[in-house]
Figure 1 (tube, rainbow, N blue to C red):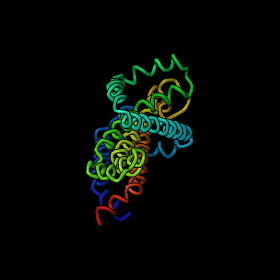
Figure 2 (cartoon, rainbow, N blue to C red):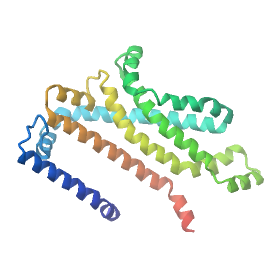
Figure 3 (cartoon, rainbow, N blue to C red):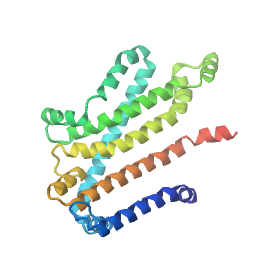
Figure 4 (spheres, rainbow, N blue to C red):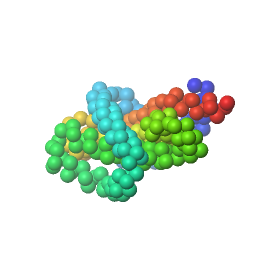
Length: 254
């Protein structure tokens, strides 16, 4: 906690300063609330309107977690398969890159046409945005395994499975967690985008309803909720990374 406070006081100070400037400008220039509400008005709406958006928030969290787990699991599986089978990697890797050149906003309506307005098209959107970062990061991490240790294990008679479990996978963990952190932040935005497809609840729905009724304060509440969810998700993955890669730090100290 002490380390977190030492590292976080600077960005916290800048954030507070920006909010103060925003508040002062809104009041000094009499900016209409429908155009740009002051932070205090947004805060009041966030507190007083909890009952109106809490079910939207919980729905987005569930959708985010489900899509993130499926997307990252699929990305890890594909990355490992492509690493183990180099010929397959040469054939499919360009297709993986091309899949990211399709705008999600354009693809989303097609998913609704193909799969309806249920849970499936929304999960597919999140999977698509989570898949690429974790797949590429995992493949890069596996390729960057120490070749001297690799040669030593082969000389010792280790099988490919043993080399993968005891050398390649552990040393790829930092890269894997980098991909997980990127996917974690993307998954929240992917969930919001997927909710614009025609969901009946979620932060994306709450934002759409607020925008259509010119409740700009609620739009900012939705924006801040998305930011907080992304930061919390990122922090959770970072804490898991510290525990999972603690062995590397101990090895470096020794």
